[in-house]
Image (cartoon, rainbow, N blue to C red; front, side, top):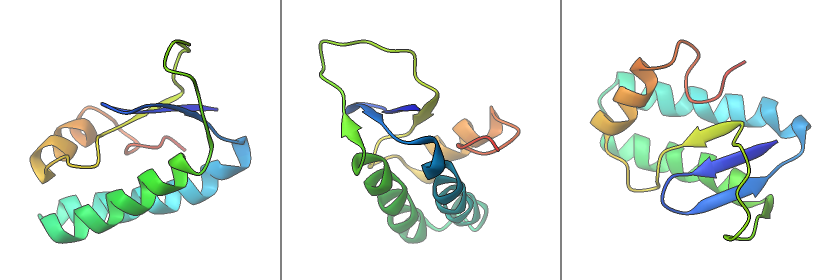
Length: 93
């Protein structure tokens, strides 16, 4: 699976990472629901670090992304808008 972090690049992760990504996504959603910027920063950091543990794709290679995640400095309002545009959170499933 290919995951894009906005403003950073793309990473390839094994499909079995999806369950852990979903759990981390839940923490992001809870932080946004609580309007808690500090909690969001922590949850988003953990989610993006999991993605970064995959294999980074070269910048000159463009692939369709299976998932697109916000940048590490995204605000509660920015993440809320991404969540509002999705019925399943940042990570479907």
